[in-house]
Length: 135
Image 1 (cartoon, rainbow, N blue to C red):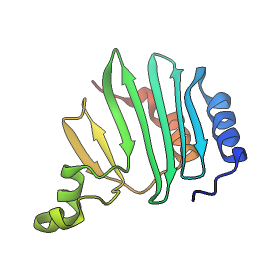
Image 2 (image 1 turned 135 degrees about the vertical axis):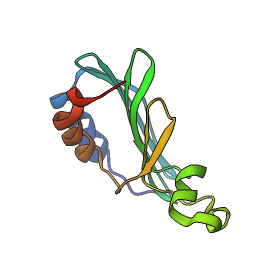
Image 3 (image 1 turned 60 degrees about the vertical axis):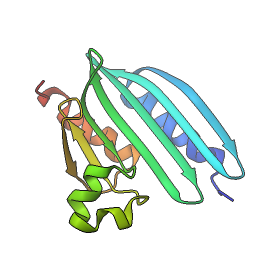
């Protein structure tokens, strides 16, 4: 059972609405086993996608910055095969379902390990870095 009050959802929506433009909640679903929240927004010329999922396995997130449909950067903690290899090397297959914090760069052609992020961390990162992106 996932214990995630509606206040968590409300807090994320409020944080995003304070920092970004054209905020739309594209999906919000909560049941005893899972919480899912997807938000679409804009920051200047960039499209922003925010996803939070809470389930029995913990919190899964994805925070992406796109421009003209291309991924500029994306932070997530999904069990990504390259991120697993970067973290565990030849032992990666033993960890194939682990959630590994990482980021995708240059339309997902590069992957780097990162620290875990919250939505607030991402919004702060975005505020300080959004206009330094290269394509």
